Image (tube, rainbow, N blue to C red; front, side):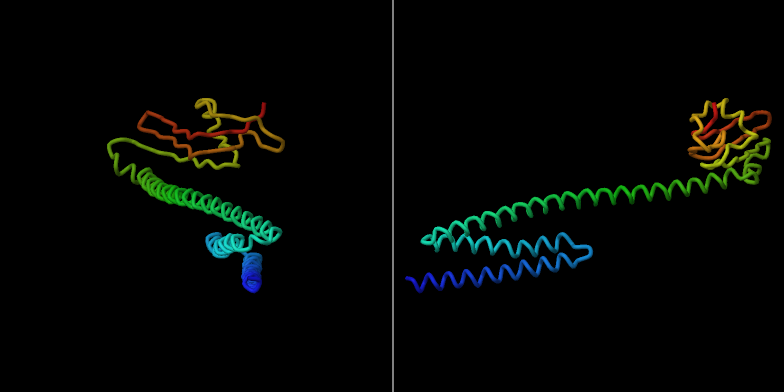
Length: 212
């Protein structure tokens, strides 16, 4: 009986030594990885913990005649089980993260498609609104479209300052160093459209810095 116990303890010692080596190897590999892959290391760690947990459970059943050793084995088995539970939680969080990332990538692709569509529409409109094309399309009517470029960080064109009050443009008080009538935000250009004696201004949404 004593020889059988010695063999079991020797085997437990050998198995534990192998587990310690495996843990040391995976720890070293993880510390050396510049961008560790979660899925890879999760699988590798579970490959260590699952057999180690089973080993400790079986050893605790076979070595009941050593109370101190049994207590240590039970404690280690509980710690390994806790680690397995934590890894399972991390796996579920990673799956949730991957699902969210997949949805975000889908949204990004949709936005890219919309941006391409808007760019094409803008190019078509710019071509249609070109003075030469307007004259060809409306030969019987005197049509003229003036486009006034607006750019964030530039002062609103002086010749069209009267339009700021006419169209109730949103304003902010000038901060230190800001010029009067500085464009803080713009969502397009200004268009002046003349059709014979009719005049129409198309003002985009603007935020202008003004003094006083």
